[in-house]
Length: 389
Ligand code: RFL
Ligand code: PHB
Image (cartoon, rainbow, N blue to C red; front, top):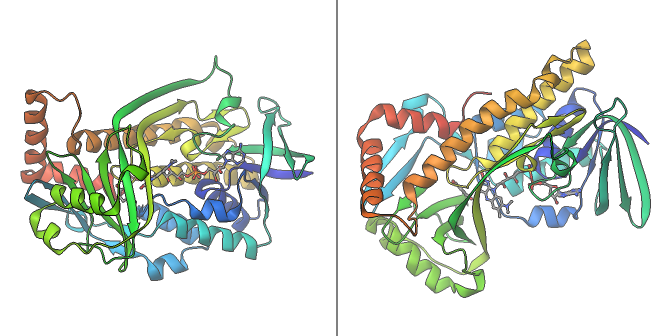
């Protein structure tokens, strides 16, 4: 079969790209390795930059987000019992939206189904062919049957463990990686959030984050050891540790309850260059990973989708390949800035196993500078609400 664009991966990147293209009359197929239920069961990001919110509107999937999402004009940063607020609205005249990745993905699936767009689930053995020619194709198996899609372009939206990145030859591909010596243990609980804004808490016992999905669904994280397993942590032990890391005024009012999800995520910074090889374009986690501090993973996936969508539109509408030819440079210029912010924020607020007394003093001085310097706060706020596309 023939399609204009073959999209590998039915996560938020692939689905958003498919929906934006469809709105402008460009047809695509989405190939997803898992079932829809599995994709929707993954609990991931919770904070959307205004740029992603606008893209959802443009894709025609913003209505529920605009209605049920919670606008946040600031966030709290604490160290021990010292806490201060970064006022996004006053510093940047912008804000972020708290609306879970699960809901974003659900809205995109609903729109795709309503539009009759093709998604093949539970695909296996996906391989990319001819990406460096004018006749690219994707081959895969579904239900034991071999299939082939001939297309103009391939979008590799298949996440960090996907096959798309591996299709770029090793002598072309350059990868940059940093692993952090700790993980995040996260829980979801049907309890009211401890505070109406997110709290990023540094402490001598390690980092903690108080986040939320809605007024009766809270998401909390604590920095943990890489060797910990979720089953090592009872709910009671989790709540106790969280309370010891956040300011006393919040620890005292924290409402606890049973966890309905508990998982550990490693922290990694990763970038693959280039993000384009011939007619193959990488988007989102397929090309880069950030540590979750600052909530940039999903948002950076969306900015890639934005550049690729506009490039494809320019190609199909005007016969102009400039946008797709400059995709990799444009996307990477923003990706590296986001990598820097996520690395900086992670370094600011975690305890590292090998930190010297000098390193700890530097970390405290950096937090104190941020607490007292408006220019530093503005730079932080600009990055948090999202750099321009
Ligand atoms: P995704 O969401 O990983 O989707 C990729 C999709 O591709 C499918 N796939 C394949 N399909 C076909 N053939 C193959 N060979 C395939 N290989 C894989 C997968 O099944 C999947 O459905 O990537 P995408 O779309 O680029 O979206 C990126 C975001 O999901 C990601 O950046 C964020 O979720 C990162 N992230 C977080 N970001 C935040 O901003 N805040 C968070 O709190 C946060 N928590 C997380 C996270 C990522 C995690 N991962 C990847 C382990 C927590 C976790 C656990
Ligand atoms: C979340 O709600 O899952 C979340 C929020 C902010 C982050 C990371 C994760 O920086």
